Length: 333
Ligand code: UT7
Image (tube, rainbow, N blue to C red):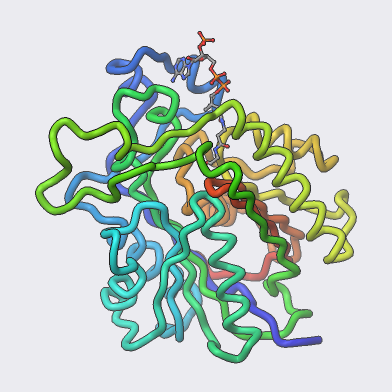
């Protein structure tokens, strides 16, 4: 038994504007049928221009704090690809808006693996005795960096935020985060990238917006790398945790594409029905995708106390990671 980070609360926040495939297909050379069959996505939520990533993060964070039953944390970690500004980080703004006093606050930039990297950072702060309670938030206004003329990315991504409170506890408790695996491969830096620019400054981007300011992804190559890297990372933490794959009740993988999640389940030898999926409702929300999937699966009664959960993600960088936990009794947020 050793000191470990234990999941104590969860929360989510989606912007109100629902965007269907049909709405996007009306302005792109696409169709509801193509998007559903190639990605599993039926709709996503998008933030209006007045809504910042920090606003969604505060919504998810306040619910996670409420769910944890404790209003304070010692540190706030925000995982995001779409910070409010290039500098400073978004986390101090979020901590301030949440009334968290002088809590430590920093961002993690690992694109779609960001929430897992954030969990690992928080677990390290707790294991090292630097913090007793940490709020980890994955938050994105990804629609801001999408090229409206690029049908291959515009139909995939959505906005939203999900959060988790971790507290210091024991490694044998339900909710204790298990072993982590994290990795990167800088040779793939150009496969998922925003080469220039940054989030829009006040007053907006230059008109017309240079293409380099937008997000680009080489989807086909990323697809297979995602399956391969998440599969290896998942297997690594299962081995370290001493879990057999058939003991895993739920796979909660980054929600990039339902075909990726199914292939990943096949790759590690898990029945496909044990893979949690909420991509139909929210699309790919990058750093927010794992906590949003956890909140939705918890609310649906899919995740029950005592269930063995395997988390894994893959994203730009390239980056990837995985961890395990036994689902604890968590209050609804
Ligand atoms: O979140 C971070 C990690 N991200 C991922 O893991 C995403 C990984 N990649 C993917 O999910 C898939 O590769 C995509 C969903 C991005 C694309 O699906 P795909 O089955 O790999 O399609 P493709 O890129 O091979 O394109 C097939 C065809 C092409 O047309 P041609 O060349 O065969 O005539 C595309 O131009 O589909 C076309 N296409 C579309 N058609 C209608 C691409 N996007 C669209 C679209 N609507 N929105």
